[in-house]
Amino acid sequence: MTSAVSRRSVLRAAGVTAAGTAATFTLSGVSNGAEAPVFAHGVASGDPMPDSVLLWTRVTPSPEAVPGSGKGAAVAADAGFARVVARGHLRTGPERDHTVKVTAGGLRAATGYWYRFTSQGKVSQTGRTRTAPSRDEDVESLRFGVVSCANWAVGHFAPYGYLSGRDDLDAFIHLGDYLYEGNSNPAGDLRPSVPPNELITLADYRQRHAMYKTDEHLRRLHARHPMIATWDDHEVADNAWSGGSPSHHPATEGDWAASRAGPRPGT
Ligand SMILES: [Fe+2]
Image (cartoon, rainbow, N blue to C red; front, side, top):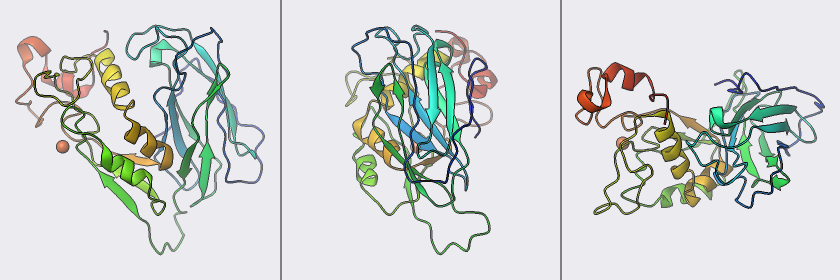
């Protein structure tokens, strides 16, 4: 996956030196005196390649900039690996739900790195990640954590917390059902979901994804290992197949092909 920086964003590489094991991504933003945590949804890395890794965070520039709201000011961002492998300037805003996703390149293969973000004078937690071995390397072994089917509504994410404590993993592989799309069932759910309805719109998905990212164990795992992810059925609809899903109702949810293609725009 390549950088998903918006068209208003700028990424400039500078200050590249010999690769170190420390990395810093620095985001400088619009200061508005907000008291809410700026990095409420943690940091994450993924898609490790021999010379790059994807870094992610979400900025909350002001209290009203809740996930899926489309509210909040645009934020300017500087990004850099310190000691210093790469540095960039990024900008995010409500059009991408204040998320930041950038591929940091120019890295050494099979090497651990640390990274973090700053915005509005606040510093995120420090994340750890690791690049993949080079393609021609005679690799003796790689070890992955493998996870799937994490349903917020019916259980806690202790396995994520356990994996976050493992120091012998090169990455963790998520086989899908990272989130569940169904509606909330207050009578039976262990944890209530937001939004309470089944996910249909882009704003729905942004809220639900951000809700998952508030889980302490999941945030810890993301901050400790890079993720390699694919999807299963619940990212779209329960037991989805090429022609539909038992939980998809065209009369109220629209055309199946459109649902499968991605979230509906809007709120
Ligand atoms: Fe599943």
